[in-house]
Amino acid sequence: MAHDARRKGIKHLRYEVANGGGSTTYQEFERQIDAGAVVVCVCDTDKYTPFCQESETLRRVRQSAQGRTFAGRVFGTPCREVENFLPLHIIRQLDAGQNEELKNTLQGLVEDQQEPLPGECLWLYFDIKEGVAAEDLQRKCTAGDPVSWVEDRYQIESLQEAELELDGFGSNVVGRFLREPTLLAELHRFVRSGYWLRHFSGWFEDVLPFFLGKPQVRI
Image (cartoon, rainbow, N blue to C red; front, side, top):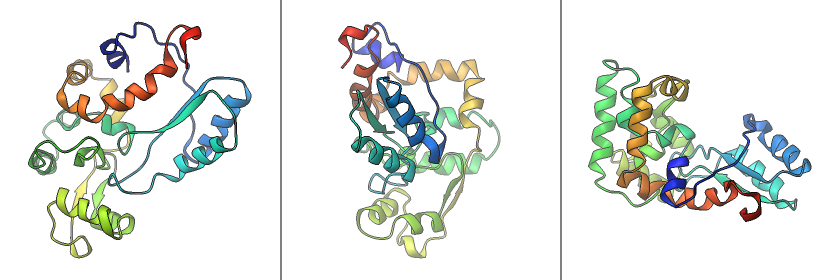
């Protein structure tokens, strides 16, 4: 976030982090509002495609926000989960020498997309922790745009007849990443890339004004 702030000429950010807890996130959201805080709530969307329904957690928080007057806003991530902000070339270094066939398959699928429209890259919606299997996609994508998107991005003729199975990278991806200084440095370089600008910069433009360092200029 700090890199996008500097890119936009914002010198100071000010915020405090309050973690939710999945199904109880809306309760923390309401508690912060009751405490008089400026509240920016960011929830994973858990989408498998750009066209899928948002997560139950995010829908519950949005529902809570509609019934309250508060300073702030509710945001869904511009991807499936926070892990999807990390690019594949960084993720694949977490387990160097392991699962190379999986990594190469994913790399090929991502590269075959050329330059997808903002918010439509396969990697944004791949379940990095658990992986993706045909039955997951069949359950969440039943007709129309979600099905067409999956068939195009995963290069399968028919989702209903597919036998797709791609493993994930485990549950502690972010924690493992944060323990690797060289990968942190790579992310700092990556936020200057065209990919980051295309898929994430617009989202940060909406989020950053709430975190301006001087209280009198917050909106």
